Length: 391
Image 1 (cartoon, rainbow, N blue to C red):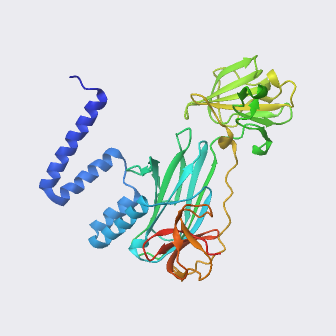
Image 2 (cartoon, rainbow, N blue to C red; image 1 turned 90 degrees about the horizontal axis):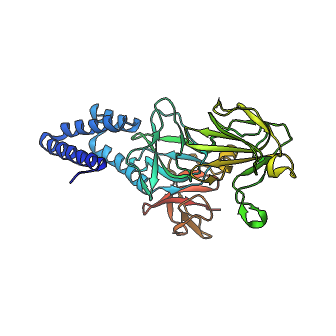
């Protein structure tokens, strides 16, 4: 039987894993460490957290038992994240308990958005790792992380319908730490009409056309005739037309993302087929050619992958960061009692519609780990972690 190339690859990996496991069993902990280093070299560099852990073992900075507790806190947080909506802002204040050192949250990144995660913190060690989620399960290796030089992650999904992501943030062992987490998104593309923004979009994806016989597969951006149209990103002009429903059109191919951008109803086409353009270059001007000749001048912008997709997330302005929480967070991991009156719920997200973990008992003791707008991130005496609003 002839094996496929994929089957041969998996067989090779299986054999290598078997050999390494056998040798590790014979050679003890040192050889097992060499095995880990081998796979780190094979699949990518060690994250700052992994590098810190290795240093802690080598220099005996952290005892093995304490390191196990620290790893355990990370694993629990990663496997039981809370849910947040973007944009998100949260102040976290932790004491030096190893079990409280890690916090995790999951969220959805829409297509066409650049994710930006910042942690404002003055301490030497704060680790942040971003994972992809597939079927609710996190990838084995993080896709990005806070670097040693700065606590910021920027990430753009390659999935055209968006992506579920998981962020795990952990402090170094025994640190009293206070940090502000900011998670926002911004458009990956330049707005295509000079001097305008999404407020100029007056006809959106899915609007009925031809008496309801078809749906609008794009966004219409209104502007005076002759307004410059800009290249959304670097790319190549793949096609020009001057007929049909679109009238004068320009097609821009984005090789990096595998997308095609369709500019329609132009007054002038100011590029040629095969021309390479840079983000912000002028490709034409606003008009009302084609089937827009009876409407005010506008650009019909379409984005195509294997089919048409909604351009709006690619065009929407950068998120405005939510306001600072008015709730006090003066002491690290301060304890408080649930108010004696009213119904108070522990939720999976800082939202009044968030899924309920359970109703809290009036007067029960909780530990406050962070605040986000009117919600507190709390840990109960039972070990549950969630958000609660005590207004």
